[in-house]
Each structure stands twice: as C-alpha cells, then as structure tokens.
Length: 271
Picture 1 (cartoon, helix red, strand yellow):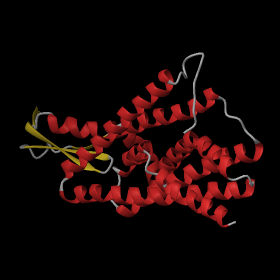
Picture 2 (tube, one colour):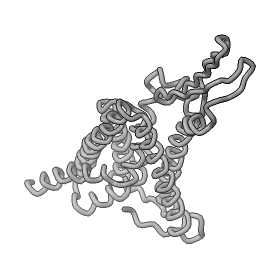
Picture 3 (cartoon, helix red, strand yellow):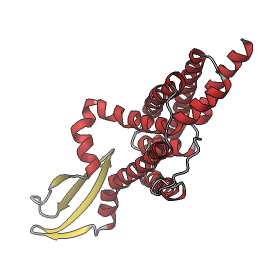
Picture 4 (spheres, rainbow, N blue to C red):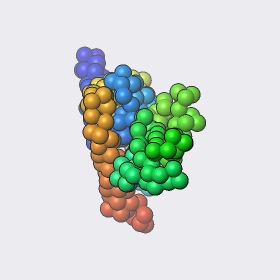
C-alpha cells in the first residue's frame, strides 16, 4: 500500500514535469503574450491544464477501463493535430502584430487634401489604433485597423468565454497527443483500475499546477515590458509566434513524413 501511494504521488510530480514539454510551453506562450497580468497568465495555465486533464482522463480512462486500442494512424493523427495547432497559434500571433509593423515601417508623412498628414499607430492589446493628423484642423481622422484576430476578439472577447476557450482547447489537443503514453505507463505499474484512474487524475492536477507556475513566470516579462518598453513587448510577441510556427512545422514534417502518417506504413511509438 505504501508503494502504491508512492507511485500515485509520483504521478503528481511527473505531471508537473510533463507541463514543461517544449510544445506545451511554446503553445501557451503565444496566448500569454497577449495578456498584461501575471494573474491572467496563471489563469491561462490553469485553463490549459484543465483541458489537458479532461482529455487524459477521457482517453486514458477508456484505455484502462475498456481496453481501447489506438491504431497507429489515429495515434499519429492526434500528435499531428498538435503541430497544426502550433502553426495556427503562431500565425495568429504574427498576424496580430503585422499591422503594427506596417504602420511603423510605412512613411510617417503622407499627403492628403488638407496638406501633409502624419500617421501614428498605437497598440492597445490586440487592437491597433491609427491616428492621422495634419496641419489642416479638419484632417484628423481616427480609425481602428483590423486583422483576423481583432475581429474575433471584438466579437467574442467581451464575453470572457472566448478568452477562456483558447487555452482550454489548446490543452484538450495537447492531452490527445500525450494521453495514450500516460495510460500505457500506468497499466504497466498499477493493476487496479480504480487506482490507475486516481493516478491519471493526480497526473492531470500536477500538470495543471506546473503550467500555472510556468505561465505565471512567463507573464512577468510581458507585464514588465508592456509597462516600460512597448517595442520590447511587441518583439517578445513576434518571437513567440515565430517559435510556435517553426516548431509546429517541424512536428508536422516529423509526424507526416518521418513517422509515415501520409504513407501506407505508419510507425508510431506513444511517448
């Protein structure tokens, strides 16, 4: 019994270690980079951990309790979805900053009907305000530029549900990729199905706690940079988007071609 409790307790700490996997950290960094509070960053980690735990319990529980067998192509597809998700997160992050880059690189002096017009871009979270003013008092338009992510945030962000769903869905997808390996590991060490489910639950709670610590620490530089160095904050956001896009492309290539998802002989080892 003491050995059993030790193994289950180990599941919690292994869950915390699991939260530090590169694809996990990269994915949440693209979401954390859009928030300005350590508290919000930690909440993102908690929502990611909740989604991850739900998938671990659902898929892992099915394997343990009902003897589900995951075919190689299905297993590779679950891991492939993580690569696609990282690509999407990277593109969305980069798209959100492209307008800022365009406004800052474009000439600051334009010529309009009222004479010389100066254009200035001001970033407010995911929104970019463009102020144009000239020597003519009537030439002072004020507009809100849009990009795809702005449209979603404007329509759903105020509800709160949209901002909560992003890390939750990311966690659900990540759980798909890792649930099989965790369940098989449990089956080799814990024979009692009830205790095996308890192990999965504690593993999930450990992952949630670990990701909260990671995102809270990750949110600190974004919060600091936003208050003092807005350009540095934009640079961090671009960096997180590029890393997510690059790592996602690497996973897609690795799963699709090296592991053979797109071939007639897929090879898959849960890990």
